[in-house]
Length: 118
Image (cartoon, rainbow, N blue to C red; front, side, top):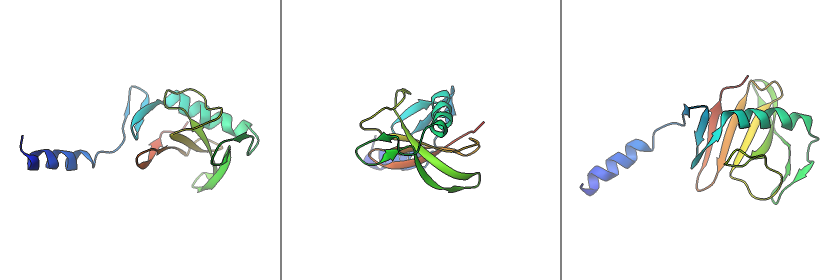
């Protein structure tokens, strides 16, 4: 394979968008279970703001205004386990009614992926 062929394949692949397959959300360098994302989206609204400290900020944290109202953010571990402290690559963002849900990846690059809400 010649270099220009490889470069064109890589360029073409870079335009692919995250997809949902087998109830997993592909985002960044991995996939997260949709059920785990929905669980975090629900649970963060039952917690006091700032009740879980991390190195960079405290969670859950208010983030921004969305079409469904104010959103909050809370980390999730790439193997779909609940985050309790320490580092993370993924953050779930959700409105209280869970109609607005995003999965954010913070790794080598940053990426925001859409998740179908409830």
